Image (tube, rainbow, N blue to C red):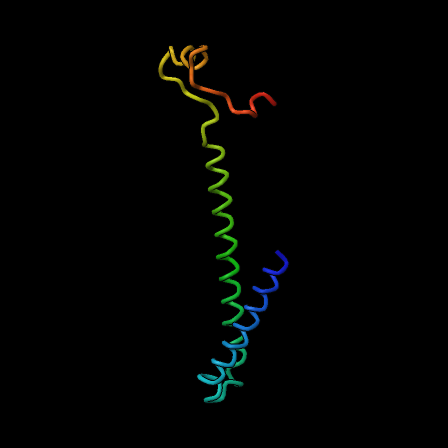
Length: 104
């Protein structure tokens, strides 16, 4: 797990460095960008804020879905045939209980 996180951090660092060089060679090398530094910083801050908010909303939706499924999920077995319990619990039944039922 530690190796995976180190590898992903190195990948992010390399991707950031390559994108920085690419944007310098294609965009920032032309014109006077130092004049627009405040606008660039504000745009970057807005981008970070929006992506952070999107991540929080995504996590909240996943948690909400998990809670909704847990709260709305069935907690009991519905039997439509009155003779079903007798058939399931008779000596000649092929039905078996799971092993964890003996632990309860």
